[in-house]
Image (cartoon, rainbow, N blue to C red; front, side, top):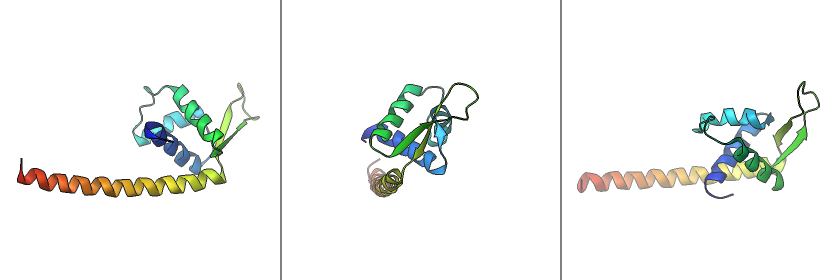
Length: 113
């Protein structure tokens, strides 16, 4: 997982950590992380989910209780929970690095506007 897809997949894992869900529901829930549900192509979310499934980080089953067409419901696996903890640790470290960079930049611009 690299770049923007890594962030998207991490967000999906966080949502699935809360509860299992469908792809379209996940698309709407991604708004809390800054994604615009109207502008993100749903196929990108399904590709991200498929990548997570291939890695063994999520599993998917058909929802037999669905009144309409059958839908796949996704849930995080134990391996996904471990990977998410590691990803969140990496993001926390990166956050501290960015904050340190901003601090030094702020000091430098005060001296040399």
